[in-house]
Image 1 (cartoon, each protein chain N blue to C red):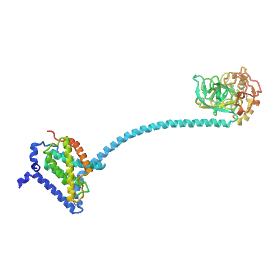
Image 2: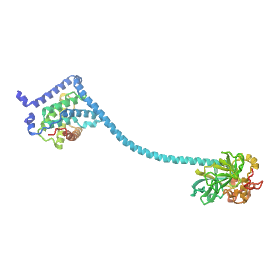
Image 3: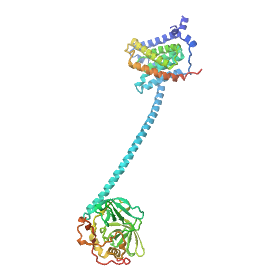
Image 4: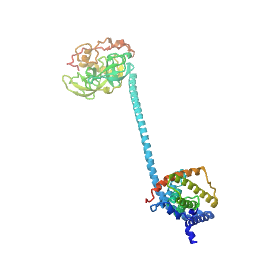
Amino acid sequence: MSYMLNPGAQSEANVEVHKFYGGTVLLSGLFALVLQALLHKYGRWSELVDLPLLVTVYFGVSRRNPVSGLFLGAGIGILQDALSHDYPIGLYGIAKTIVGYLASSIGARIDTEHPVARFGLMFFFFHFHQALLVVTQRVLLNLPAQFFSVRLLLDSVVTAGVGVILFALLDRLRKSH
Amino acid sequence: MIEIYSRHRPLALLAGVVLLQVLLLAFQVKRERGAHEVRLVRYWAVEVTTPAERAGSWMLSKVGGMWHGYVGLRETRAENEKLRSEVEKLQIRNRELESQALEAQRMTRLLDFRDAHKEAPMLPAQVIGASADATSHTLFINRGDRDQVKRDMPVVTPDGVVGKIVEVFPASAQVLLINDKDSGVGALFADTRTHGIVKGTGDPEPHMDYVANDDQVTVGAAIVTSGEDKIFPKDFPIGTVVSADPGNPFQVIRVKSAARLDRLEDVLVLMTKHEVNLNRAEAGAETTASGAGKTAAAQAAAAGVSGSNAPAGRAGNLPKSTPKTNRSDAPAATQARSPEQYLPAQPPRSQPAPAPSEPHR
């Protein structure tokens, strides 16, 4: 728990921090948002995958910097809110801010390089993200929302599976030592 | 305080950012149309993402177009092959139908011709083969002894004379064409009634022999049967003059046969050896001309029939047997079916046949 409160202090010493080429994080986040919006045009199957969440989690666990992770999550979430018309701005922003922070914190502690670990991590973060959304909607917006459903389970499995592949691709954008 | 903040800076930042967004949410929720109040944020977001979305959409549409084009091309290729195969089948079917239609037309012509000349019993026949010898102009038809086809029966088409039966088999018969070198047909010019003999030379075009150099022969003049060979009906088209050149002792007249001898498919066998007049309308006119129009060749043909030395006697199409019946005694042509009734008629001869070297004009 103490690490959760000050993870940056230990991450540099214990766990390898991955660096990326300039603009990679911003462009990847933007690309994920654009691609998500574009895929929506081609059918509801695109809703099975949450690409902005994948990018948030990946760069969070890779950079292992809670500050950059929370700001990346906030930026991506707010843009995602801005691009959607149904919800007020801040819904996805809050959820992804917390996910970004938590991903950076967890990435500093556990191995996130193995595909199985990545699958489990994404599965967890999908439902965590969903829980944050539901809480926000219910508490702050007084909107009905489900914590769990078969559809959400399917979404989480698909997202985690895609995450394993996407993470492997994003690994190529890392700076070599 | 500062130390605490620096130690827990990430957590503090998280709390700050989340709090800001909660406030933003609260602000939007309090105002019912809150979404419009934060239009600037949406505007920026859209401005940032729209160009990328436009580019991505363009790229996806291009890729999609290429993919659809590729898939479409593959489908088009398969469809093209299928259609090509179908076209080939239809072309074959079309050729069959065209062939059947042409055959029906030919048969209709033949039947019309037969119906128009009911006085002469005719048997439609199909050409089933030709001679294997290039110099021999013969063909085989699908009618034979079973159909009561006999030797020396004339074979015609509505266009004109084809030849005569030279060999009869049970189910087929051999026809000697008029352009065979052993063939000869008693003939005369339709307009001048000048007689001669159309003989084959082995070439595709037969010649008309025994026409004196003094006789006026024009290119394109129609040549018809004279009926004096006792095989072919009188005044039936043989052909037209292609060229007429002076020769020794007779003109060399090349004849283009009226019947398409090289493209025969259906023919008619005249089932009688009695003289029939297929052109009754012209019979009267011919009668007036025939008295003065007998040529030496025509009489030579008659002489050949009777076994004299006249050149017509060499003509293959001329009957070698002596006529046994007189025309006046012949039964009706339509009834002539029995072998006895196939006997040739004997026309009355008013004058003896002169020598071929002295044609009578």
